Image (cartoon, rainbow, N blue to C red; front, side, top):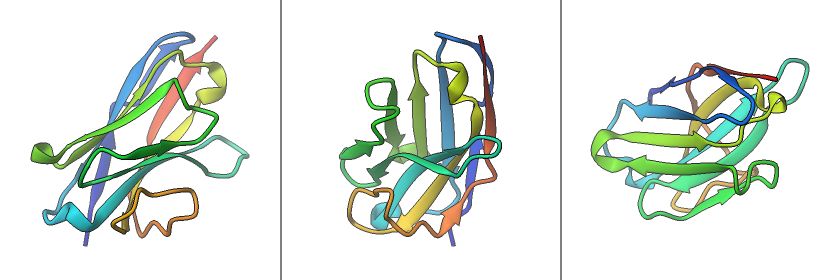
Amino acid sequence: QVQLVESGGGLVQAGGSLKLSCTASTRGLSTIGMGWFRQAPGKEREFLGGIRWSGSSTNYADSVKGRFTISRDNAKNTMYLQMNSLKPKDTAVYYCAAAITFLVPTRDTRFVYWGQGTQVTVSS
């Protein structure tokens, strides 16, 4: 069982930055792949990117490539989402998720554990 807790959401002006955190409550994460998603009101959940817990390989959705960066700190059991050059259309609830995989998660990966989400609001 993996419990995930996101933090770091809030209100930011367009062009600003925000860093989200996702802390996993379990150890033995070497077979876990992690991902970030978001869901805006009235829209489907969107995969933003993923990272292997072991190693540094990542992948990103085209919509955030170059603006968002995923990283993790194994010692803290924490994954991060650094968001730069934020736009009003980035406003959404952001979720982290975990999958049982040795591969870098993609949008097609089956994520089985989810956090509760954190609200990000970008004002114009």
